[in-house]
Length: 217
Image (cartoon, rainbow, N blue to C red):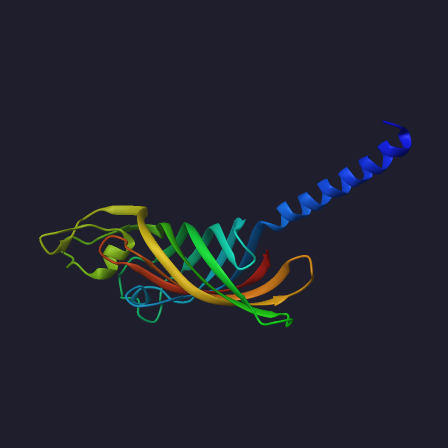
């Protein structure tokens, strides 16, 4: 093969590889954001508004259908208005790893779009008490003690001292989002609201985080 023939072949091959790489890259999906976490009953009986953070990555099956894994942190600070006197006081953090499906909807040539999303996975609720807290002997069992990780026997709270307690459970989520296209490269600003329910022991965890962030897909 002569040099005159070899150079165009090499250029065409390189262009083909670049195009293939671009197509593969567009299959990649990514999101990161944060916002406000709103607890729902029964969780709202013990905690108030908190913050949230979410980051995920996945694969675009088609332009409208995406499968992705997501890590999420949600803060669940004590509800000072409903907090009982002499009850434990500290903080609760919720960590989750979920697998989700997203179906997107585009509005013609408009930069605005929308999507529905849902999935499920592992939810870990970690309660940490600011100071070493000892339950007074003979204290009646109340749901708030279960929330903080204390046990119960014969209708009275177990006398013990705890500093932290973790509780794992499966959970599900579903919600909707709105996007604004920022460029032709796939970057979008998004706002999302997603209902979450986790089957934690005795008291389930229910909340709706409202997340603002950026998506690439």
